[in-house]
Every structure is written in structure tokens, then in C-alpha cells.
Length: 128
Image (tube, rainbow, N blue to C red; front, side, top):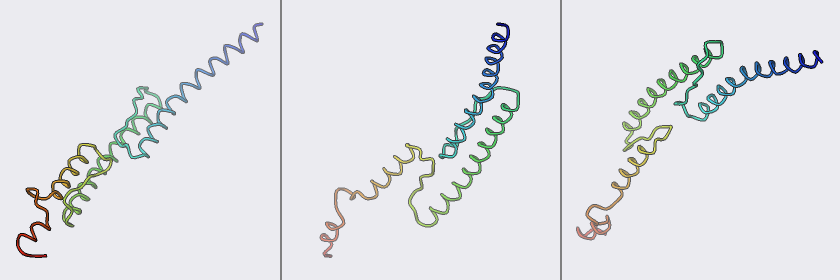
């Protein structure tokens, strides 16, 4: 009987120890997956002081560095696109408010001024 109780208690302790290791690894894997999908704003919330907590901190620092590097690259891309004659630029990850603003600008550029189309303007000045 004592062997059985020892076996059950030992098994339970091994299970709890394994969960303490695998749960933070799952969190880190989820964050890595989100970052790989383009979500550079995601961070880990691991609060432990052990190696897994240090890994989580390193992960967050890496995400910060990548995000800063990307922001600088995006500004250079924006400047290059505007210099090449583009009217506007929407960067990734796409923010809905920026996309809506760019689409509104585009729409206002394609709508005829005062309801007069280009063909009506041409007819008015005698061009066909």
C-alpha cells in the first residue's frame, strides 16, 4: 500500500513539475506564432525569475527591437513611395483608421469636382 501511495504522490508531483515547464513554453510558442504572422505588438506576460522568465523577457526585448527596426524601415519606404509619385502609403500591419483615411483620399481624387465629369469638361471647352 505504501508503494502505491508513493507512486501516486510521485506521479502527481512529476505532472505538476512538467506543467510548470510546459505552460510557459506554450505561451512563448503562441507569442512566436503571432509574431511570425506579422503581429509585432504581442508580448509575453511571464513573471517568473527563472530561465523561462528570462527567456520571456528576452522575447519581449527582441520584439521591441524588431518593431523599432520595422518602424524605421517603414518610414524609409513611405518616403521612397511618396518620392516616386504615390499619393499615400498604408503600412503593415494595416491599421483600419489609416486604411479608411487613404481610401477616403482616393475617393475624393476620383470623384468629379462639383459633379462635372471629365467628358463634360471636355465638351464644355469644345474638345471631343
